[in-house]
Image (cartoon, rainbow over all chains, first blue to last red; front, top):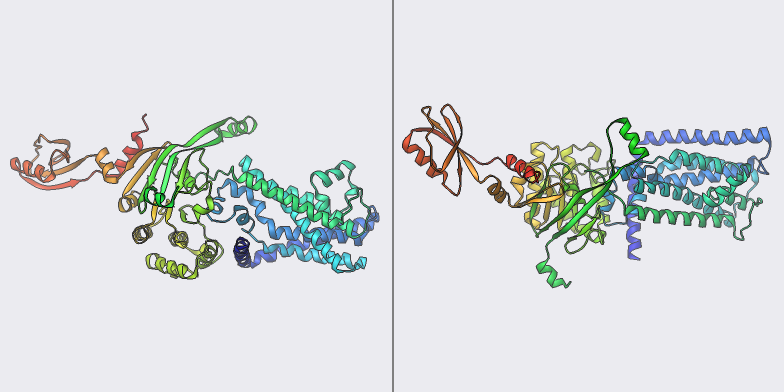
Amino acid sequence: MGRIRYYCSVGSLYIKQSLQSTLEYPANLAGWFISNLMQFGIGFAIIRFVIAEFGALQGWGLAELAFLYGLSVLSHGISVILFVPTWYMGNLIVDGEMDLFLLRPLNVLFQFLFLDFNLIGITDLIPGALIFAYGCISLHFVLTWLNVLYIVLAVVGGALIRGGIWLMLGSISFWVKNRASFIVLTMQLYDKTTMYPLSIYPRFLQIFFTVVIPLGWIALYPASGILDKTLPFYIPVSMPVVSMAVGALLFLIACLMFMRGLKRYESAGT
Amino acid sequence: MGEKESETTMSVIEVNQIVKEFNVVKREKGLKGSLKALIKPERQTIKAVDGISFCVEKGEIVAYIGPNGAGKSTTVKMMAGILTPTSGEILINGVSPHKNRKKVVADLGVVFGQRTQLNWDLRLGESFELLKRIYQIDEATYRANLKTMNEILAIDELLSTPVRQLSLGQRMRGDLTAAMLHSPSVLFLDEPTIGLDVDAKNAIRKFIKDINQSRKTTIVLTTHDLGDIQELCNRVIIINHGKVIEDGSLNDLIEKIAPFRHLIVDYYADIAPNHPKAKIVDKADTRVTYRFWKKDITAARLIEDLSKTVQIRDVSLEEADIEDIISIAYKGKKAD
């Protein structure tokens, strides 16, 4: 109990100081805000265009796709706030910057994850919330307590899946001792698999993104569950709960992989 | 191990036969070499540290020196729990840093001259606030330590400056303060004076002396600055190629490598009288340099003997040059 309180107290100060750091550079924050507003605005415009041109995709109309895309961008925003250090993990490992974490009497993974609580993720959350709200309003979606809980589970689960995959890929640097840049690849994959129903892709890709790399659980399956869409499989638990469970499990495995990798950490020359 | 026993017999730092091997891909030069390393990597094992042992007692200041690539930083990183030895054992206050890292580092201060633990974006004081919480330093101790650091390093004037605006010397004052806030009993300083100007260097040296005297802090210092060693360290450990090649006081080292001194005598005439217990090593016009061994004859006696035969205008006595001695020591074991 004392340990949990200790980690909460240290964690909250890390977060406070990260926020201060971000606010030191307001121009950067403004730049990201404009850029993200444009990026997700264009994403939404493409969805509108596709629906207007070709009609509903496998039973998903504009309102449903806005709901799906909004949910996806919201989980993206949370993952950007929480897991941005995983993006430059390879550099931290190769340049020996993990030394500093090892010199402090605190869990190394904890220090790594709290290194950079990234307020800039809010600039993703805002367009995400706008698109999601558009979807909800068009669908006359009722925000009951249960629905709010489902949405929270889906967003957190989705963020954990995104972050878990980043943490796993980043941890590979412990073994290969090289800077691997996977961020562009994963961003593309995350985007392309959460914008439309997976059923537009060939069957083997659908299975691959459900079982092997569980990207379908980021937004598609929880959104399908909440909106009562038919799914290609049957699980007797509500989809957002499964999504949260998949996220938690994936992230746990990623943490274990980090801890294993850390044992191989070799610092840098001087 | 009983507590009582450990207090009486235990050294603060015990390093026992440690070895550290790294697996590296052999790289040849040029694009061709890079391609070869990519397609058919040739791995080789490098022993950065090859069976090093030493003990450090409470309150010692030890200079841990050696040429670049000798294995200094690797040893320090193993002692600080950053790297795990391939074999051998390290105990800091009786605890192994790689088996119980958190316990060891809670009582350890580490400063790397080439790196900072301060938050670049925030004011210096805010980095200290974070450390206060991480090390669970109570308010009274925190205040007292900051006050001490202010007396030695005038840290107060820097507290509200963002770290990115500090000069290298100011930043080093900040890093040393950061390392002392939790009152560690052991301090590892890896090249703390690198790149600093004379004043900043003196401030750092004064800090090391004061902390060592007032708190009996055990300090291991790696440096390339021989002034640091001369001014601070009662003991020097020299390593090269991952092995300890000398371990003793600076005076013993001088005695061992260069147990002689030079007497330079300026005569009125162009002559060079011999002395049975001194050897002429240089002669330029009226200036003659004699080399003599302390155990054979004193400087006073030699001057007296020489002045009996010829009239002397001036004399000066030259101690062995510390740089030369260290350089000889580095090379000493290279041959074998």
